[in-house]
Length: 138
Image (cartoon, rainbow, N blue to C red; front, side, top):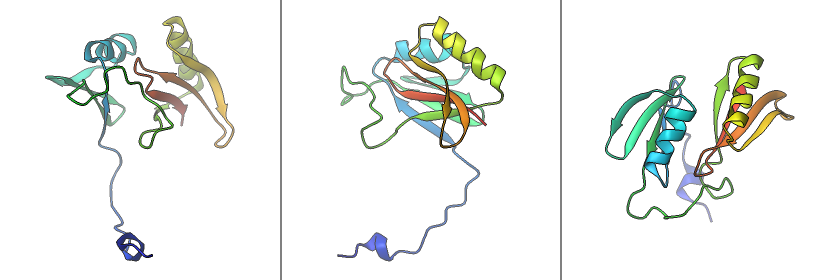
């Protein structure tokens, strides 16, 4: 059976890139400490139950729990939806510095690894809700 999507022309969205990504967390204060105090991102906007920082040119919004947020839920890259976020790393020295700093801060991470498919080094880590991030060589 053919659906409406099967017979549509491509929309061909024109965009210069991602404007922002919003992440829902289970504990707002814990997430704020992690992203701002531990990782060192600068808050550019904060309001009730939300703060925003920039990773390069991309805004990252961290939203606290709302009615309907699973109380003790954690992120899983195997559910439909977000698998992980990857931010660009400018050079190998910075990659190794961040990997060492993540380890020193006892943040769950992979250490520096090679992505066999793309041939680039990265370090993957998780926030307190287990949301998966990568710091990935450009």
